[in-house]
Amino acid sequence: MVIEMRKKIVIIILIIAILLIIVFKIYSKNNQNSNSKINKKNEPTISGPYKHTKVIEDNYGGSGGVKIKYDQYVTANGYMGASDNVYYTRNGSLYHLIVSTNKTTKLAEGVGKIENSMETVIVHKSNNFKIIEEDNYVTYTN
Image 1 (spheres, rainbow, N blue to C red):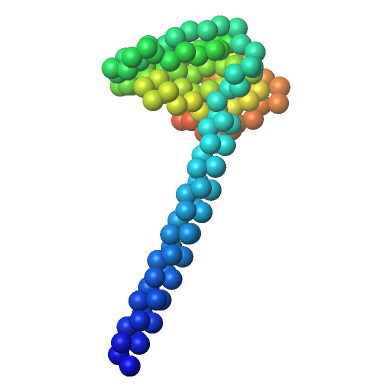
Image 2: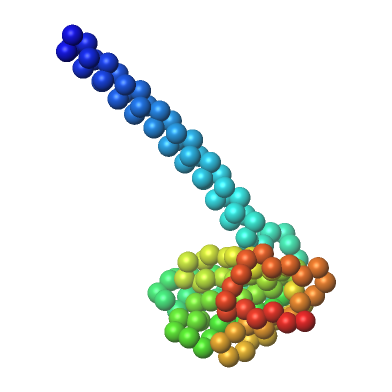
């Protein structure tokens, strides 16, 4: 009787372990799909219009820099490590690029022009302005 009880416990533990593995795999697959969608949404399209191209050098030991295609761009200033942050527009959208990690985040749509000011980037709103993601360094103005 004790042996049968041990067999039942082992079978129950195996079933729980298998279920946990299945749930983990499903969660991992869904998480990877959502991350790839987020990254594609944040970065400008390859074929989208732009006026200029520039390679921005990484001041933190990276090699080769990061190539951006932009209409306007400014480099952050006013705090330690600010030069690692570039704000640029492309086709009416505002993006924030962290040069050392090559991570781009879309901040807003409907942007007219951007200006560098001490400890902020001044963003002039245009038609159909919409904030996509908040950024404490950016100041929006009409």
